[in-house]
View 1 (tube, rainbow, N blue to C red):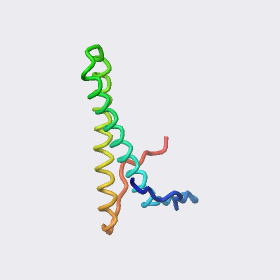
View 2: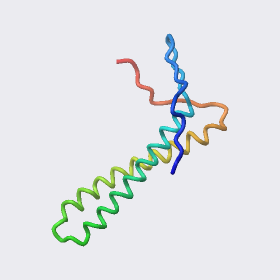
View 3: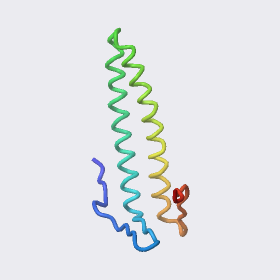
Length: 102
């Protein structure tokens, strides 16, 4: 079983500055990776179970579409975990795609 840390963060929203807890980002990304992996296992199992039932064609199709979406989420989660963990050793970290004020 994976260990997810931290259970608390050191985020800070003071004045006009935001401080983001890097370890919390890693923990959230790891949890997303774990969750997506678990979902893929469950969805693949459901497809396998439905494969022997002739009348389950639509259910198999719908689960396969869901699996496709989950696999894309897994890809993003895995890439994000990798970037965050590798980023620990980098001297400069840059956040991008930060939404502008509406």
